[in-house]
Length: 366
Image (cartoon, rainbow, N blue to C red):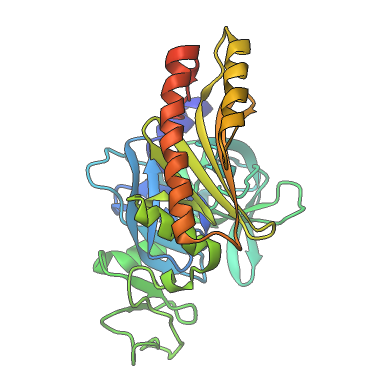
């Protein structure tokens, strides 16, 4: 199997994951009918969004959480047609073996990086990891580490910041142990005790908060989203606004303080930066035409002069309609009015720019 064939075989098995905590990668194991990822990707969220090449973005339940080994399992979509991928044998790995890390670093879909195993048994905090020099970055977390035979040999877990390609993956042997332990109760929500590794479920948790095996305190979820009440400030207002506009706020979440919604043919990306106190909404409409660009520029400048609270700009080849809100003055009522106008005008202008000026529709990544 060539490197390209190997990467192609994983495209339909690797998924993007987003939650309030951030973004990451997961991969589907048909043998267990589960999506595997890192616990820190879904941390404290028992409902996340997933997206794959064979299915649209949708909500999915997190049903297993293991803080110690940084593992989590997610319920896959039904009838998504995701392929079978095989798990390898950790005992057969050696320093210097070629490996490929597959994931979505910084939101870049289906990125693969090749390297070698620097050390097959690097121990950190009492846990054995595979140290690799293949470049992995934020967003790679939870993705598969694959050998030259196309087998999963690890779960890409973390990097050392400032290091030169110092990446670490949890060995597939530890993943298999967690999977085999969970499968007998598959479908139930379970937390693996960080002290004794026993599975804690709603049926066996002691006094509603302790591991029955060792007595360790466990923050077992009382609902699918135990941290919902912790959302506050401008982020909470943004989600209230989306709610009132009939948008699915949960499905819109694309990471920490980041949301993405569709309005007609336009894609609107909303980002809140608490450091500078601004909520920025960018509606990506279409791309510049090959001809008649001067007439298009004149049109955009005239529209900018007429509009209040919104502005056209050019980002590379993309035409973007943006609005900006100061978090301290943003309210649900004012936000609903402003967002509704932005959504409406985004779809309106997108059609005009394509029909009248020959602009090209935005490319959608497969």
